[in-house]
Image 1 (cartoon, rainbow, N blue to C red):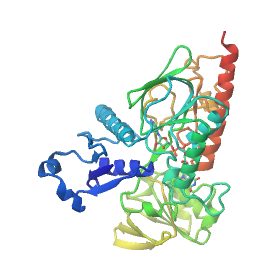
Image 2: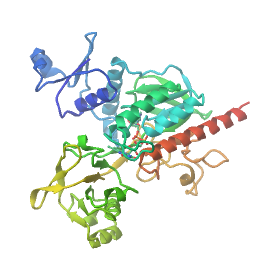
Image 3: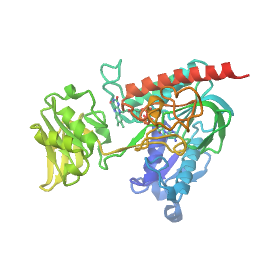
Image 4: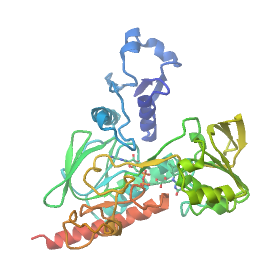
Length: 435
Ligand SMILES: Cc1cc2nc3c(=O)[nH]c(=O)nc-3n(C[C@H](O)[C@H](O)[C@H](O)COP(=O)(O)OP(=O)(O)OC[C@H]3O[C@@H](n4cnc5c(N)ncnc54)[C@H](O)[C@@H]3O)c2cc1C
């Protein structure tokens, strides 16, 4: 297929990333640079809503008029019809590109939502135990981990592993063991039924019923808006450095962010790093950080705080070497060996957020955390919720989207495996108790 569009347009960038990450053979025509653009009529250039996909059978697919990224962290209720149109467009793009978008059955033992490390692991274990498993992914198998150029700390890979490689092997493994995938498909609506199953509708227009579910939809990190993605995993990391301070002994490290997570990261790294620079857009740390952290940071002789300062560029051949920063003294170069970006993350809960209990930041509550509330009227059973079980019996949560999760590949994999085992026990108990 051929994709026509312009760089920088949200729908174009998303479509390219979606097709490339799913390894769809693609000819990309940049309307501002590619000589092929000259073959389009003036009318096509003017009226087509870009991006426009041209398929081998001659058919065209245009993006919706008001494209809205359907999986932002926080949904704007006023744009719900734009989200839906954009999700349906992506699903149509996936269907015509030959990706699986329609379920083969009406009923499943388990639906897994999200094919990041947590969802893929849950699908591998559940399918290998013989459960009819459907796994639904809106973007591409691998999730956030699939976007990392090198994961250094995942067990069993002494030289690191690329996120794409890890995603591809896990995807093949889950398929080989019998899990069925839908790709480019968004869950648009889910409702629990009286018999304890869940009815789910997808952006492909199809619907299924599942006896149990694992929600593993992850989080969306707010991203930097300059060219830095090629250095992710090569010195640049979104998220916290928990437990890894020693790796940065005698290194120059920068942390971007002004909230508690950034403050904790800076203090943690400063235990061993030669120098930690905290880059904060606001004019003081007090605006977003707790006082006790501010005090410790200000007293620390290896942490430098640069307020009213933003990173605007990054440089490095194989690894990050320096950042371009802009602040009160103008633009400067900051030699940097490692960068942690902590400018906010939102849990991805679209489609199920209105009926499952969440914490005040939107993460799903599970198991013992749910029991901290004295009001139990929302829980219909005599037994307590199982570990990783949400406020809906039979619906489990694994990975980054869960309240209290540790945002790491290994933790997501562990929770995915545990969720599959809990699903197994839950379904076995249902079968035992059914007449
Ligand atoms: C750039 C980067 C580098 C990282 N490097 C490391 C590292 O080196 N080591 C490490 O341990 N951790 C690293 N992490 C963190 C790690 O990748 C995450 O903790 C891990 O991927 C979380 O797995 P998950 O399955 O919970 O969620 P995710 O990986 O976020 O996967 C969730 C999936 O669900 C899909 N989804 C969401 N909503 C829906 C919906 N409604 N319908 C269908 N699909 C949906 C998403 O498209 C996504 O693919 C990194 C993260 C990033 C962003």
